[in-house]
Image 1 (cartoon, rainbow, N blue to C red):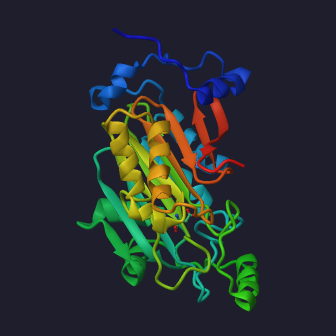
Image 2: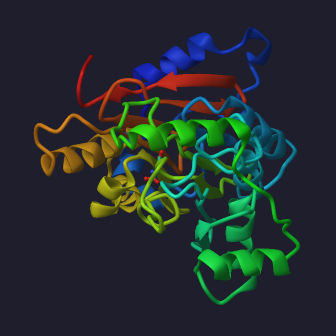
Image 3: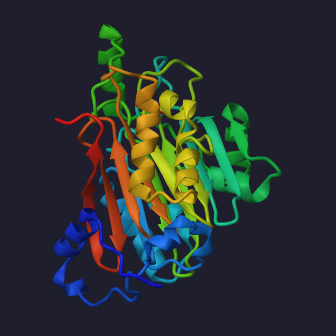
Length: 336
Ligand code: ASP
């Protein structure tokens, strides 16, 4: 029996906010039923496609990804080129060029990418390269390995045509000089030293891919690597079920292998929203009473449903579908 699905509040709001010019463009009706979700692997088709979402309101990034998806591009190309927009933006001080440095003044980047077949590539502690996500893709496609680190990753990038670039901008240099006089290492929720872009997409074929890229925590210890380039922690995609990505204090995400956990919860029947909530709850169970950190999870399932949840209010995500582009605010574990 196929029952009409009750649209979650977020999607109802989204439809209400959709631009009028896009009305009627949704080519595929939403008629997934709850039963489908009980066995997500039985769903072979995405009901809402194409679709792209990314952490925070990086709307230029989802717009770029949408351009690719709406021209029949693959989800893999869409997520790579989508996050590249932020990597190249020197005013985004949490990703790529213009990312804030570690406590020694070096900008070190982490990124990973995963495709519909479960292939993945990752770079950690990469310096002097504007587009770590593209290096990660090359690791996936050209090497027998999954992760390349530091000098080896940089060398590999040069061998594959990437140019050496100074990633520290005047602005981030000035901030770093100021930070050195105080050397505080306190997190400021939401505007803090972390704003990773994690992106998930479904293409016209219904295939999923994901990408995640960051300069990591500002003023981190030299050599520190967070969750973002760790497959299963900062990003995980399973083309049978869905995908998830994370932003926030990576150490806490790694401890629960957060993105993998969320995808497995969806496999067991949870919606993306329910799975993200459980992912945050698992972390908070181990951190009872702690309020000094933010984590935001974002997930999509094979049917094109989306969900997000965070520790503190303020985490949003950008979404682009046939209905247009929206910014979604997500619920949080701690209320205002
Ligand atoms: N998760 C990233 C890290 O820990 C930072 C962030 O999301 O802002 O490196």
